Every structure is written in C-alpha cells, then in structure tokens.
Amino acid sequence: MTDSKLILPRRKFLTGATLGAGGLLLSGCDALTENAGFRSFLRTGEALNKGAHRLIMDRSALAPEFSAADISPIFKANGSISGDTPAYNAHVANRFAAWQLRIDGMVRNPLSLNLAQLMKMPSREQITRHDCVEGWSAIGKWRGTPLGLLLKQADLSTKARYIVFHCADMWAPNVPYYESVDLVDAFHPQTILAWSMNDGTLPVRHGAPLRLRVERQLGYKQAKYVMRVEATDDLKKFYGGNGGYWEDAHDYDWYAGI
Ligand SMILES: Nc1nc2c(c(=O)[nH]1)N[C@H]1C(S)=C(S)[C@@H](COP(=O)(O)O)O[C@H]1N2
Ligand SMILES: [Mo]
Image (cartoon, rainbow, N blue to C red; front, top):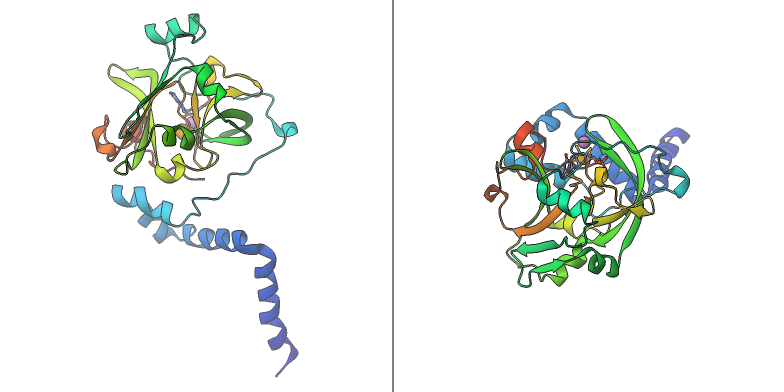
C-alpha cells in the first residue's frame, strides 16, 4: 500500500472534524441547493414551498449577531414608511399612549398589552443583518419582547400551527400588510417583537411602535406596524391564503429562510 492511499482518507477526516457539525451541515445544504433539479423541486407547489426548504435547514440555529461597531450608519426604510391610516396617525400624535397590542386567535388567554407593559417584560437585544430581496442589507440593533414569551402568557392552543401578524398599513382597500411564521420561528430565541432600534425608540419609518424581527428570514417577513398577533391552524383563512402580503400579491415564498 502506498503512503498517499493512507494519507488521503485521514486528511478528509481532519477537514471534516475542523469544520465541525455546523460546517458539515452547511456544506450538505449547499450541495443540495446548488443542484438545479432539487432547486426546482423546492419551488414546486405550495405544500413543498411550505415544507421542503424548512426540512433541509437547521431551524434552531441562530442568525449571526454583530458588534456595535458593525451597525450600519444608514438603515434604509423600505415598503411602507408609516402605518398611515387615521387611527395609526392618531396613535403617532399621541405617542402610542393609547395603543395596545392584541394577542388572540387560538389562545386560551387573549392579551391586550400597552407599550409600557411590553417594555417591562423580559427583553432580548440583538445586532443582526437585515436582508431585503431587493438586494440591500443593513445591520441594526433591535430590542424587544420574545414572541415565545408572549405566546406562553397567552397560553397558545395545541391546535395552533402559525402565528399571523396584522399590520396597520393598507396597500389597497381591504388589503393590509400582514405576515406569518410557523411555531419553530415563533419560539426561536431571536424572534422578538421589537420596540427599540439602535438604542432609541423604534422610529415610525421602521415600524413604530412594534415590529417583528425573525432573523432567519428575509426582509419582507419582518412585519412593521404590528397591531395584532393571531394564532391560527390554517393560513388559508387569511386574505389571499398564502400567509403574507407579498406572498399573495407577488408569489414570494412563504418560507424566506436565509
Ligand atoms: N407593515 C409592513 N411591514 C413591512 C413592509 C411593509 O411595507 N409594511 N415591508 C417589508 C420589507 S420588503 C422590508 S425589506 C422591511 C423593511 O424594513 P425597514 O423599513 O425597517 O428597513 O420591512 C418589511 N416589513
Ligand atoms: Mo424587502
């Protein structure tokens, strides 16, 4: 037996060991998603769009977090830059003093919480990168209430499968912005309803008084102007039935994992 035959497998093994479990998992996913046949399989049909992509990812992994020095000096505001309805504008004028977040649907203990109550709860702070499908990214610091904590307080029903976020901004008559996530993302440790951005109160253009941060997904999932959080067993019950404004309007993937 020659030396090279002995050395080659050992070197392969060392590379694998150095990469670690996360690295190996990632390279496995890359190999799959680089395969054109598998990519088109992923995009086939609604059931697969909601399932296959999620199955090949490590759903509990954390999105990268950055340091204060990485925070973008300019963070673009995109989509709606205000809730811009008479009711929303009245809340802005009143500095959201009378505003309340409603948490209802498939919960045993529906909640109404004002901003002060939300801010008194345990919160999480994270510096993360926002990636918009339009091709820009920005790093910002977010602080907010973990969604999982709120859902536990609301006593989520065992029948619930998705969490829907109802937003203030209307894109057409009877067409508000809305978004939804499954329960894995709802209880992910980095999924928060943020009321602070870059150490200040959340600005109106970035979704005041409350916006979702679901850091393992693309920008359009980060619902701004969240007024109501509703637990449900079926996304077909809402608007166009695809789980979000862009999913209904433009065929965007419901699961926008990054
Ligand atoms: N309510 C609401 N949420 C929204 C949008 C919107 O138009 N309305 N736009 C989405 C898109 S496409 C992006 S990229 C981000 C932009 O967030 P930002 O304005 O804080 O950058 O918000 C998302 N959430
Ligand atoms: Mo976006």
